[in-house]
Amino acid sequence: MSRKICVYAICKNEEKFVDKWLNSMQEADYICVLDTGSTDGTYKKLKADKRVTVVKKQAVKPWRFDVARNESMKLIPEDAEILVCTDLDEVFEPGWANVLKQVWDNNTTRVHYTYAWSHSKLGEPQDIFKYDKIHTRDYHWVYPVHEVLLPIDSNFEESAVDVGQAIYLHHYPDNSKPRGYYFDLLELSVKENPDDCHVRMLYAREFLVKGETQRGLDEFLKVLGMPDVNQPTKRLVLLNSLLQVALTYNQLQNYDEAIWYCQEFIKEDPTYREPYFLLAEMYNNMKMYTLAEACTTTAEKYCTHKYNWVERANTWSWWGNDIKSVTEYYLGHLDKAIEDIEVCLQHDPDNIRLLKNANLFYKEKLNRISPKEESKIEQGVLQI
Image 1 (cartoon, rainbow, N blue to C red):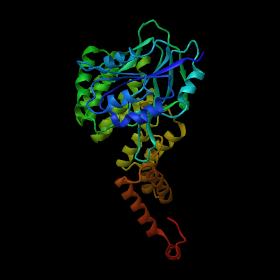
Image 2: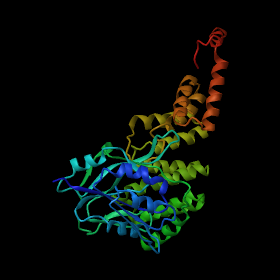
Image 3: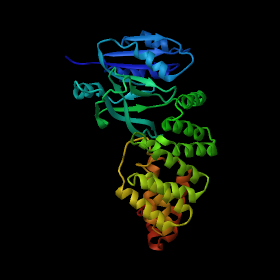
């Protein structure tokens, strides 16, 4: 007998996402939604659609994401075995439910799959990492914001299956929505979990999002001093915090500190591109182009794609090409610089800085060509 799949979600004022979301989620046997107080047509639209098993309107006061998600789980039919949590601004690539039913066995408690948190202007997936919101009933949600699934029983033995990109979830966030309330919920989360470095890291990041650079830096330094940051289960917190500190010092043009934290990251794990690329950027700024070249070469030759949230959005698309184009220009490798800047523009064609660099490289190319080649340009023969 085929196992029943239930998609469950929370929502508020997301009418514009409903149709696209339901078209993606309709592969499930059940769709259950908790509307936490929409004032637009979200609830009415969900209620009228026959693909929705149940939609309930219920305010959650005081507001917490974990409470809302746990309340939404109460709507799930009893015979559903595979629970899939999504938000209305997310869509699966087609065929996801079939994959789930094929890989799920009697021991499976959770599935890991691929998630694109954002997309470029051209629609390319960015911030790609493993996601884990497909699970059995053995879990519940914790933390007021940036909530996560944890086993209800601390002694529970999890058995996860990783399906890679066979299941791919895409996120298309509504950036017009305010996120000011996130900060209050993060403060509450820190108060409730004062010794949890993961919670403190998210709190630190929010200061950077708000533009409070120095406060964000100070908070990340506190994270690095917390006792649990060196636990194996918090490995990504350690690496991400080292990188964030390095990035922030670079932003403040304190290159000595930024370089030191990049080196600390590499000591912990030398197989991420991020610290090498950041070092290369700084060496370019310091006119140490040979060192910059060595860093990008090392990153591209030896590092591996982790698909986790430590990695930056464009690390595996065009960040390296951007850095190399500058290095190559100053080292006199103009043809290579043009090749790399053209790769960058394929990914971000409206980027003013890239366009200015490209214009500089093309002008330099024109200045170097011979009179014979110049006549070919007039005839449309030579391409640059």
